[in-house]
Image 1: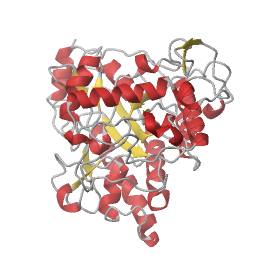
Image 2 (image 1 turned 180 degrees about the vertical axis):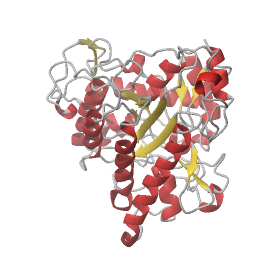
Image 3 (image 1 turned 90 degrees about the horizontal axis):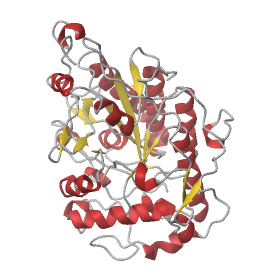
Length: 427
């Protein structure tokens, strides 16, 4: 799980513009703020049902009504969910921060549990984009029929039986802690493959097949694995799934019609987005949550708000760069995230999106950068560390007039006359 998949690299030259650039995505994760708990915050204060030990990776999975073959179970509404509140006229909007994880596999380097515990400590919620084949043991690879590829093909590795079990358990604990479980689809085919046969070539029908299979693997893991010593996922994945992120941020154009038809609420596959308030695409049916261009300390160009894109500019795409530079690179990555956060926080308050992988690239410095960033921002006034799902819910209770005003603010633009004047007539 430490090998890197074929992926598109955002070079320093391409990053100068940083807009429309294609970002790298998951190779298959390895792995495994004391913020406000008011109703408008992302984190909930209550403990997971079934008894909490203070460690979200050890919480007891509650009993529920089995669904299908018993891979999923209905245990009731998801715990630790805030109630979204409409902004009052003249009220300053919260600063939303979404940390999201591509792949979200439970292998043995401890990164998944590490960030579940960190989120618990700082009352944060996040989005975990689960690759469907991470619930399918490699011995059952022939069950996957990827569009435009041979049966069982995948550009990320299948997991061992033990890692599949770990993934199921950690995904369960993540959901019980209040985190969102989205999708990273399955085989992770990028256009950077030698044959160029990536998801950018897929049709809406291909995406429908990929989605159906991803959902099928997660909702039928018990049949596919034969495991009898693992509790069911404590939620109905078919109902919980409302968004995802494509491999290498490619193929969104053909994906959107499919997910709009499915009723999904958002897509997080755009690259090179700006730090402005999001809007809906696909005839106003789907929220577009792009990775964003953020300042890159020491350079005149910007970089996308994802670990791999920072790596691409530091070690030229190598995941094992010069160890003598790790400390400087760690500091640069942290400061890049913090610069993006501060730019939004002190101006237009646009939601800030960070994409990550459970990987020990360049000695694990990007994992450290994310942890340091989360700790630095969690305690700041008005900060809400939320999932994409929770952000959608907040956006959808706002008045359209308020959202139009927020979207009128450019990158780094604070409202003229202050928030009380700017949103004083909203509502």
